[in-house]
Length: 192
Image 1 (cartoon, rainbow, N blue to C red):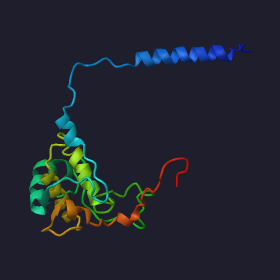
Image 2 (cartoon, rainbow, N blue to C red):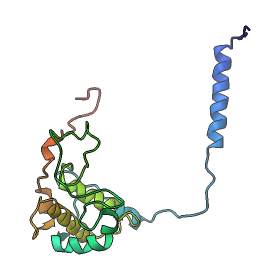
Image 3 (cartoon, rainbow, N blue to C red):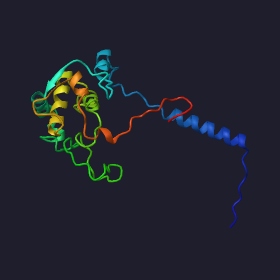
Image 4 (cartoon, rainbow, N blue to C red):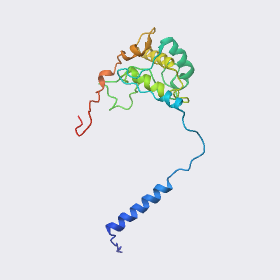
């Protein structure tokens, strides 16, 4: 059995595609659900944290390991385990990185604060913006400094009596710091 095909002009095909795309785009516009509300400026400000590896952007505040342990027990342990060993969500504590920092080659390796994160300031930034899961941005700067101190202590990176603030957190050298390459692209027509 032979099938017969007819040719369509390029113009007709272009028009058909445009009409189809327009119909699809119109049909995919979601109908508002009538729930929620716009975020207030205060809510936006609380989540507008942008901390750089060198500590630029860290807010004022301070927190000790002991303070962080208390906060962790109340706001973090149910998701990450009693001592950061993992629960329903990610494990936070651990230093084993496998042979040769093989995270890209071995998906069984668990990425933790102690074996993978290159900057302690990134831990502050991430925690301040996204934790706790059910109430992101609800932690004070002092609570976040305390949590970071506690988690770094559990990973053997800072001593159990550490107190972190803007100046000291930026000076913490993470075990994986030299395993990453800084992005040195300058943009423009040439990207290095």
